[in-house]
Length: 336
Ligand code: NAD
Ligand code: DAU
Image (cartoon, rainbow, N blue to C red; front, side):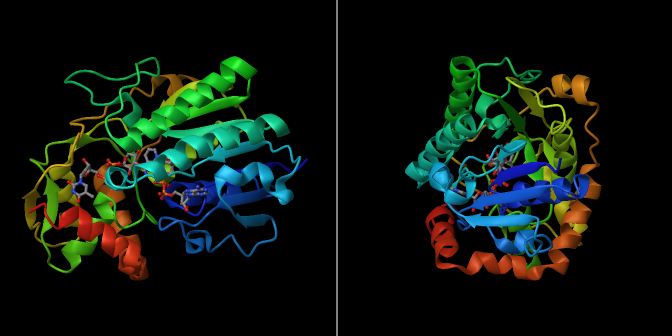
């Protein structure tokens, strides 16, 4: 029988890429998308799919998912939750929106999945473990130690998922990934934002000394890995699915500007509060069960990312909305 999938937050960066992977791997499947289209979501991200009859788009909030008549009593083969407020810097100013979507939204989706007996995969982040010391790598058993309101809201969501597994025997699992990059990321995040500024010859606001380390995974590589859990659902498990090594932000900026063939006009600005120095997660549990994460080299991935943004310059227009302008004004004005 054709599979039925519910993908929440599929108009955002990773969710849209995952929906495309799912679409291709399961050509008979029906995909329902629930997305409220915040500043970070756009139907353009699903352009190739959303006119197709086997994709149903519902513009709705995950907090209300249980009340959507079109979803009533549907048992999905898999529900994946990408819907979230995701920008760490925004969580400094709009904390309650992060709690509402990331915590209450996850709770609402868990209830829906229990009612319909649908397995649920929660997409989470390496940020829930907090900063890794030198030579420290976090397995799934590491304690939660979030630093920002964003990370705290994601850790809270993970705890709700784990509680539902223990309390109700719910069919649920958590995938924690590291920094994704690639096409269709909202251009307030480091890589597309710096591309936007560099194209105009403007200085690049590197927080603090720029030696903070992140593990960058090309979005298609993450989604290919994630696809493997669809037919072998890791019920009750947490799985780290991250990039193998980390790079200092200054090194990422250097490679990015080299791909853009422009000079890096680095401007060190005031650091992000509670800025974790390093994230490092251990993905061996995932790799032992599902095989190695097939990860492209960072320089190749950055070249592909640059090429995509160069052929889709309209993506930077998303920075012109009043909401985006007002966020940048608030956040960057006094940093220099
Ligand atoms: P994104 O910000 O690009 O997209 C989020 C999507 O969720 C948007 O389409 C938005 O409209 C939608 N959304 C927000 N609030 C909603 C609500 N209340 N109801 C319904 N839809 C809502 O996010 P992303 O970068 O694609 O991240 C997806 C998931 O992966 C998130 O859970 C994030 O925490 C996690 N994650 C992201 C990264 C990364 O590097 N981008 C790394 C680790 C984990
Ligand atoms: O680690 C996973 C996380 O990666 C996800 O959970 C988040 O949803 C996702 O947004 C991302 O968070 P980061 O804070 O790491 O992403 P961002 O692109 O905002 O920043 C990457 C690094 O670059 C971080 O160390 C902060 C730094 N930075 C960012 C911006 C926007 C700067 O130095 N200057 C900037 O202007």
